[in-house]
Length: 229
Image 1 (cartoon, rainbow, N blue to C red):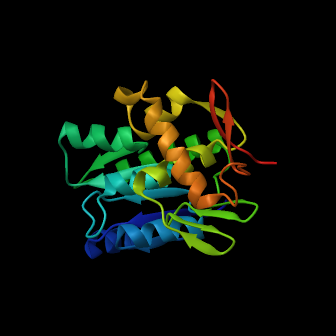
Image 2: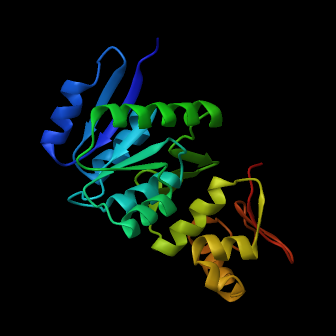
């Protein structure tokens, strides 16, 4: 039987200690992180099978960690949190979490949730890599660092979100409406001028010749595509 790698992103040492002592080491390999940034880095480098994530982290809220993970990986995320109110659960699930367990929880229930997550992971297949490369363009989706030719490119949050959305479906045409909904939200689905302006910003920062883009291609009347060839 193969060992299942669990990444535990949890700042409470007693919770990590409980999991470490309770989970069978012949079945589960624990990878521990006490902050959101450390957890994101571990997810990118260690390729866990399942992520157990606390919401109340000292540096980044767990909901934001979930959003950032979902930019590049479909690894199952189980929230372990003392926040038991419905709005917290809904926000975490909307951000991309697969399951939500309120503290304090029992070990048998946690193990049952892990088994369900494992079945889902097997059903949906391979995880994505945190690093996306296209020619001399490199996107580190865990740290949100973008480089061109080895030089870091400073992007605003919206510019990064737009680029990451295109990279997630690289090679496919994304319509104006799709991109506006994914990056700005449903209320902006008709605001094409936002999209045109920000694509222009990205081209100025990423392309050698913004007038003849290598990466960010316009599909006239339809949308944009991050060209793979």
